[in-house]
Image (cartoon, rainbow, N blue to C red; front, side, top):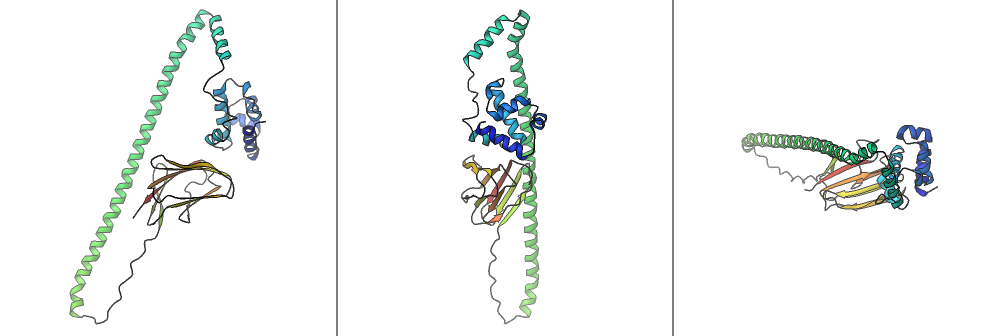
Length: 290
């Protein structure tokens, strides 16, 4: 049994899933599932299908396929090129087919090309819908922020007017007692959730932005800034902690592979997940500097 197959089988056993249960969930034949656990990829239709089956298996047992492909890249079959004997065998089979079947095979690439174009068009349309939805949410957030600022200004103006009206009365009856100047209040750190298509937090009132990742259980975490720069993306063993000073950044996206087993602390304050069940999960933190 390969290391990758052993990892997948262990995850299946932890969920008390049999091979029959896994076959029902993934719609992959049981013999291929056994082949994955034993590392016998030669029995599968091709390397592309082997990678696809491994991905479906991993998702069914709540493992991150990207993490597995990276960690066990030497065990996972590569799809860069297929074996030459297999290609030659296909050519000979094509020549031995009847003319009607041969014509269908000649037309098959055109059908596949049309199908790919249709799928790409659908995906592009869905992406544009998501972008439009995000823009609408951002406009709503900006509008709400402007309303809050307007209320603050209005309340400040009202307070100043009331103070001006009370000044004459103070002049008529001046008080000899002097009052000590009040010390300016120190702004408290605020970490609040911003509504949107993803879970986004806004950090304000903080002089620094320090991210602390605590692995309560075995997990995988990736940290990127708004420009796509990756600070790290790796598996963190149980009990370990990673600390990063991100004060120079204005936006950070954290991908957590095991939400229940991972604590995130911002300047020592524990971040409360809005969704404690979805795994893996993307979290964005916007740092509002003073």
